[in-house]
Structures are given as structure tokens and as C-alpha cells.
Amino acid sequence: MDQRYVELSINGDSYRIAVGPNEFLADVLRSKLELTGTKTACDMGVCGSCTVLLDGLPVSSCLTLAVDAAGKEITTIEGLENTAGELDPIQASFLDKGAVQCGFCTAGMVMTAKSFLDKNPDPTEPEIRQALSGNICRCTGYAKIVEAVADAAKKMQP
Amino acid sequence: MQSFDYSEAKSLEEVVQTLASGEEVRVLAGGCGILLLMKQNLYFPRALVNIKRIPGLKYIEQDNATVRIGTLATHNEVKGALLVEQKLPLLSEALGYVATNRIRNMATLCGTLAHADPTSDAAPALLALEARVVVMGSQGEREIELAAFFKDYFETVLKPDEVLKEIVVPLPPETAKGYYSRFEVRKAMDKAMPGVAVLIDLEEDKKTIRSARIGLSGVGNCCLRLEAAEQFLAGKEDHPDIRQQIGDIIRATIDPVEEYDFTVDYKKQIAAVFLQRVFAQAYSRASSYS
Image (cartoon, rainbow over all chains, first blue to last red; front, top):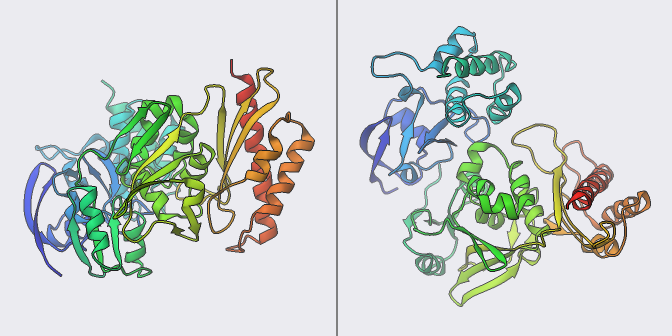
């Protein structure tokens, strides 16, 4: 299938790569750009483990064609830590609160939490649970993840 | 994934030309329906024409007594639009149930109608609001009542060379109030089985029903309007007998299929229960409006 060059802007860096129109962003991130923080699990837009931000909005990168992501600002889990290499407060809270077991859902959880807290910096627990409702975790039972997001929100209070 | 011919259109006219150029060319917008079908090897179109780069199709605007929703407006854009929240709260409410926040950021409202999933959350609200769709084809534009747009299981009356241009929602009277609810077993990524939207307008006495509109999903091969119950309710007041009778009407009208653990009888029963509940909520909203 014909390849075409697209310009992808990921975590502030620009990448010019050849992709086929049938390639999904999640696969391009992982296989062509070695940004393997983004995971694919269900590969059907259901589980949320491939969540990335497109222009700040969470989307399923396993259902987003790479050619469609061109011209948009893509943020992956690799883009959260600052230039000094310090973790984003949400990542730090996931570590502190032990909100990780197998880790497969974690990047998606963190990205979902990131876009959620950007909009709602002081959420209630039901709001956090609602915001995470589209991300599936088969290990933790969610309690620690909800705690971690609440903790991150507290840390980020001005 | 399977390969296909791919092009990006610059205008809807160009889309129509591409669609008319051969068989099995499909429109790609949000992609949440068609790409998923292709990924699962359930569907093999020869070509996709991507319409997402066409400028100016994300509008959500009032035009006299209607709201027009452009073909590229996503679920979240429609749901969060001030105009929709204020003038069409029933639609906003229903869109909150759709899939997940991620999918609502990707999927377009027009796309979900063209996809014609019989368990849609958006369709019942739009049916109750008596929405129409404007489609564009080689023969020009035509406007279709949404109730007549859905043809069968994942099928619409769209011709191969036609593309959805916009949704037109007539503004309901200010006194009309609606409610949407659905049977759900989880909080995200659930299917509406059934999804029920009811819009009620009451006479000045705040008791007598001037008009009732009922949109349903998850009750058969198509999303549909329950006109028999709408006509039955006109001129009546809320009463346990009335609720009983609309339950009987929906049980007699719908034609669900057995799937998962849900038998036909169970689905009819749950549809009746949800219609009764949603009707009661819509009625109480309408009667308490001042």
C-alpha cells in the first residue's frame, strides 16, 4: 500500500515519517518511533490503554489513523516529565500510592487523568471515578488509581 | 490492517464525486465505526475518502427555529455547545452516555447516524426531537426525517453516492422537557438495550399532555419512534394506568432479538419499565417547569 510522508508533532518534537494510510497512531508510536510507553491491549478503542492526547483531548490511538494525527499536537506518556527529567505529579502520585500492578493500563490512566485534571483541578471522588470510567484495569480494583489521581490533584493545587 | 485506497477530500462536492466514482467507497470521519469494522475484518471497503480535512463543517448553530449541526462536529463538541445545553438539553444528556470520553472526542454525531448502530444513545434523543438529516449526492441535496433514515440493522437509506451534510434539529417549545435513560450494566462502553428518550410538552394546566415524542434504541434492528404511544399520550394526564398502557404498547410494538443472556420477553419487559420511568421523569420535568 502506498506510503506517504506525514509530519507528526509529538511531545513538542517534530517527526517526518512514512506511513501507510492503514496504519494506526498507536502502532506507529510503538513500532516506528519507539515510543513504547503507549500500550495497546484491546486494540478496539474500548480499554483505554492506548490513550494519548490530541490537541489536549484524550483519544484512542488504536483507532486514530496516523495520517489523521498529522497537524495536531500529540502528547504521550513520554511527554509528561519535564525537561529536567522529573516525573509529572500524576506519575509521581501513581508511584507513591502504589497505583500500578502489571502496568499495562497505567499510561492510559495517567493520560486520561492528565486531561481530566487540566480541566477539573479540584475534583471530587465520584468525578474522578467518572473520568476514569472508560479506562479498564484488570489488576488493581481501581481504588489505588482513584487515590493517586486525588493525591495528584492535591499536590497540584496552587 | 487490511489495505484500501485512500484520499482526502477538500469539499463535500469532491466527496460526492469520489463516492460516485465506483463501488464500495466509504466516507471516513471520526472512524470509530468503520475503522473498527475493518479492523475486525467484518467489512472490506475498496476505498475510504477522508472528510476530516474539509474546513467549516464543525458548526453547531441556530438557524431561525432550528439548530444545525455540521457533519464533522464530534459528540463532545455537540454535547458541550452552549446552544445545545440550553436549547436541546435532552440531546446533551443523552450524549453523555455515549461510549467513553475518548470516543466522544473522536466520533462525529453525523457519523454515528450513518453507522446506524441500533443501540445508539444519540439516535433516541434526536428521534424524540424530530431531527432531520440533510444529505448530499450527485442529484443534489435532500432532507430526510431521521425516523425514515434508519432502514435496517446498521443500514440507512443513504445511496452509495450520498454523504451526510448536517443534522437539523427543530427547537422544541420552551415548555417541552425531555429525559433520556437506558438500561446499563456498566458506566462506560455500554450498549443501550434499551435507550429511551421522551420529550413531553404540557398544556397551560401543567397536567394535560399536549404532545409526547418517544425515541428508542436497542429494541430491534433500528432505532425508532414509538408513534403509537405518542398518539395515545396526547390529551392525557399522568396516571398509573397510563404508564401501564404505554408499557403494553411498547411490548406489543418492538421486535427485539435474543442476545447474550437477554431473552425477547426480558427485553420487552425492560423496555416497558424504562419507557415508564423515562416518561415519568420527563413528565415531572415538564410539569415543574415554570
